[in-house]
Length: 260
Image (cartoon, rainbow, N blue to C red; front, side, top):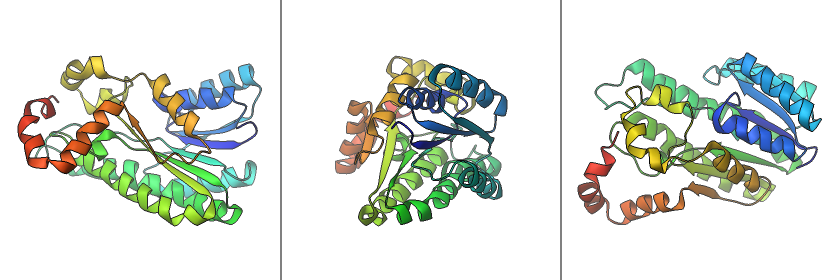
């Protein structure tokens, strides 16, 4: 990936920052996007100093589609073509459906779905024209198997998977790769918002994935024909069993599914 231009949303922490570090090690040029510019600039300094690559940072709230258009136009003007887009920005709030507020619902859909689609729409025309590129959408196992207290969050990730799968088929004749990444719980600051009481983290802590491990899997897939990355693989089996035996799965797995 040496010399390739890679754009990462939500790059100020978590797996976004870890993906950036691994891409920098490979010699790629980076464009890092997030709301927290201070964190991005510190990451920029570290990556440029140690890896001698070009790193550009832009403040971006992916819930603001007008801002997305402005930022991506700046990227095209300053950096040129985008070879890989990693749609990593996202958040969740774990509440039962009757407890979720409209603002929380709109916020999750605006960031997780509309923002992801808007960023993708900005790179599609040039990727199709060049017949080259890779779009990587960070979804979730929640997009394959919904669980109690994540009804809205799961709905957003179901939407991401539907969009990603259709997009993959649309771009098949243009040599543009599309990959969905479906991780289980990851040990990041995501749960500071999603799980305010810490109940879910406590219940699944021994199963939580390390950000660096997930990031490595994502980077390994870049510019390959990888369709999906499911982590951990055993967790993905739950969604397979659910498709085949939904009623049985819900009855037997009720206690586990309510662990939030």
